[in-house]
Amino acid sequence: MSLFQSLTNTAIKDAAGNEGTPEAIGATALIQSLLEVTAFDACASKRNAFTTFSVISKARDLCKNIHTRIKVVDNSSPLDSWDAFVQYTAAIDPLEELLFKLVDWLEEEADKLLNETTAIRDAIRFVKTWEDSRTSLATCYRYDSGTKALEALQTGASDPSLSVYADLQKHDDHCLISALCQEIGATTFEGPKLSAKDKADPLALTLVKQLTQVAREIKVPPSIDQPSMTLAAKCAMIVQGVLHLGEHATDSDTKIALKAILVWEKALSLLNNLSKHVSDATPLSFDVIEKEYAAFLELLLNLAVEIPSEYLDIILSVKNVKRPYHARTVELALQCNKLVEYFKANKVPSNLPSLEGALNAAMEALEAATSAMNLLKLFDYGKEDVQIPGITDVTTKKFTDAQGKVQECFVAYKMDPKDLTERMTAATKKDKDRVEQMKKRFKDTKVCATILIKPVNANSLRQYPQKAPNSTDKEATLTAVLWGALSATDAATITQWHIASGADKKRLSNHMKVKEIVDLAGLTFVHTSATSAGLPAVPPAAPPAAPPASPPAAPPASPPAAPPASPPAAPPAAPPAAPPAAPPAAPPAAPPASPPAAPPAAPPAAPPAAPPAAPPASPPAAPPAGPPASPPGPL
Image (cartoon, rainbow, N blue to C red; front, side, top):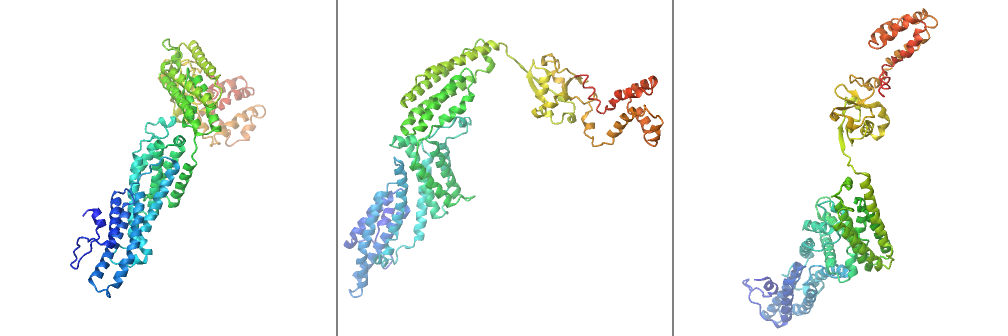
């Protein structure tokens, strides 16, 4: 038996339980006809199908119960069948009314599925109509509960409770959401273009493409509660309707307004959050989605045109254009800015098309200039085979087209375009003059050399090793190389460093040029305080926490100046125990190489006068710091 036959079969079972062919009964003939009409429409309906079938099935069962009462009357004496007679005659009118309501409902609802309206208010009203229709259908299902005549026929009829109906309604909503998301995923509407920044990412998708991707991935589990299922259907329905409007809106202002990026950002956010709401992991609350849905409707009702995104792209792209197109690019951006300022003050849809044309043409010119400059390096201007302004065929035409579109927009806005051409001509001349200047000034191409400077050891270099590799011009001096190797904050210490060459770490003059160095790979970055043996001078200075070593060196420097003048004997007496013994042992041990020459010269000449001379020479007692005395020589 087909679904149609099942919905219209009002035959009752006999005593043996067999269901015979329904007989033509005049009292229920209209009911039979109404069942056939509703069943035919319900079988062709695209949404709310299961709930519609449940209402028709319930009406069919009520009709069967009427037939059962009629059979009781036929098979019993009039006195015994009076109650059955009253029941079936009283139920015919309300059942006919129920079916007429269902016929009217199906006439409005049966062919509807997608939101294919052509105006924003109609798209919003479409969602409201669907929601109201579901409520009306639920009322039809409960119709018998408010009618005593039909309540009396409930024996053997479907469960009148709403639990079964609610499950069927949820299933209908789930099917509708799937159809709407499928339609969103298959849309051909393109929406706003990618910004210039986003175009740099080969994987970037437009907002509408992202929207379709999210719609295809939404998985609404049948287990969610009915309010969430209904809200999900409403969200999908309004987004699908707005996508349809983008291509089929009859009002040109609506089409223009739907180019606004904000609309699609909000639509994408709504679907993203809806997906989170119905998911099992970290779901968003129902109230959050409901508020976002209401805010989206408010945005649509108060939709206003926005400044095209190409304007921002132009402002951000100017920095990418080199000579010989830079001055023209700046001038073009300034002229576009004047148009945008006018549009901001007169933001009506009719002003948008001409502005879009001008901005699109300007952006194309900037993109052409940027592409052309990828083939022309800065110092290539000095080559004879490079024309001025360079690769001109496509790029110059793009600038000419853009200037024409800008002038058209000025005229459309009733703004004076008289000086636009002169300003662009002046900008072009500025570009050409600058290129000519570069050609005359830079005839020889400068080549950079890479210098690898190795550290003597990790201690002497501290934090500088990571800056050791340095690339510079061959004409550069080693001072420039040092400056490049040191960090900006430590540049003040440049006098403490030098560059050495070869295995013996021979110091090179900072005034040498890179081109004078034969072995660029054998250079070493050395701290000036390091000894020729490669020992860092910083470690001894670093442990100055050992003041005991430093004080003893200082006292000997100061006593020798005073003692020689007054008492030679007093010194031994004053420091009889340690000082006298320590000094003699210290001098021979400490200055093995350089100090020994100084002491012998001092005693033979004049013991009293010699000591004063020795201290000045002895301040090499700063030998621990003595290496600083050696730097002055090389510097």
